[in-house]
Image (cartoon, rainbow, N blue to C red; front, side):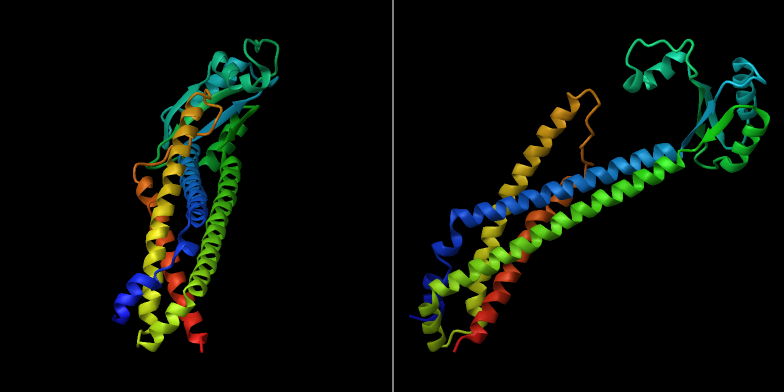
Length: 294
């Protein structure tokens, strides 16, 4: 029997490296990696959308002041904004809208009469040529007592920093799962070599090269990793669908975890990467062990 025929029947890793436990562990690793990647993508989209909205609008707060009546303050600010270059729209919020904004803190049905609640003017900027907010803020503060311009810059910076930290955590999870997968494949490959040591020695005697023996293991782990990571990715997709349904029923209190149309294609990188990592790890592990064999 030729070396190739013997290898095809005996060198392939047996049950020691192809059992259900190994497949389950690799599926779990892929599941965690897919969830971490999906969370990072969804967070990035949400941050971009929120940051874009904040960058395209500003709010003018008008606090009560003895020098001017509330109506005069409001009308004065609107007059300054009307027809101004870089301002697309300016609208004073009604008391009902302000009360709705305060519901999370004050509750429903709370009247604003008698409360020192500032008036709010929502300003939409011209995205093509936005107004100079620094100059606008100084002018409003100078001409209208009690009026201040809030460009949401501090909120935007906090949001970006928070998003970056969460993205870093997601990348750390991906790195840990990749290292864990490499460790698992190394252990399983060494176990497979130990279980087939006699066969490998015979193959060496009949002239089989180390690269050929390594190719048997790398093909085995390529198929195993593809199968396991596909299961993990499927479970992650089901988890995301369930979370999405729960989020929709949460009345807006839960974050939106919806992915962009092209994001599922990015998630396919999880099984592909897992398979390539497992294949390469198995090959280098086999070559390293065989090089040390007498």
